[in-house]
Amino acid sequence: MPPKSRKSTATAKAASNGRQQQTRLWLMYPPKLIKEPLIWQLTRKFPVIANIRQASVTDEIGIVSLELDGKRSDIKAAIKWLEKIGVSVEPVEINVIES
Image (cartoon, rainbow, N blue to C red; front, side):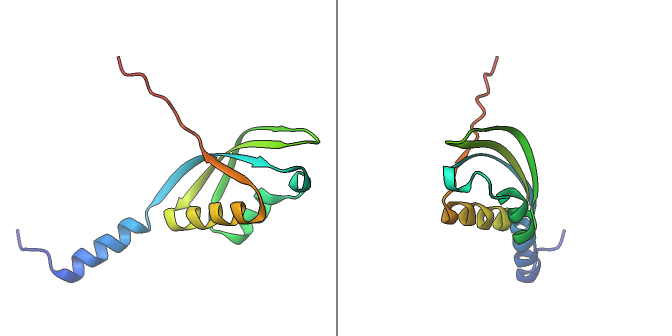
């Protein structure tokens, strides 16, 4: 098998950074943002697919469990935007019990 050239290694690295991934998040909306269509805006601003898994909204707070599919860099940018406008973003931690 021939050795990999620097170019093919760099190309492979760039391709791995652009790989699709799925991230699950908890979003906590402050009262002033509850009526804003933030998830719709998010999907217009960033090339990600949003899937609402669970939501609870009152006059005081909105809590949403959201799945984002897309490139890692796009998901990171989307999270940064949410935080910038005042939404608290936390990863969903899934505990796996091994038997």
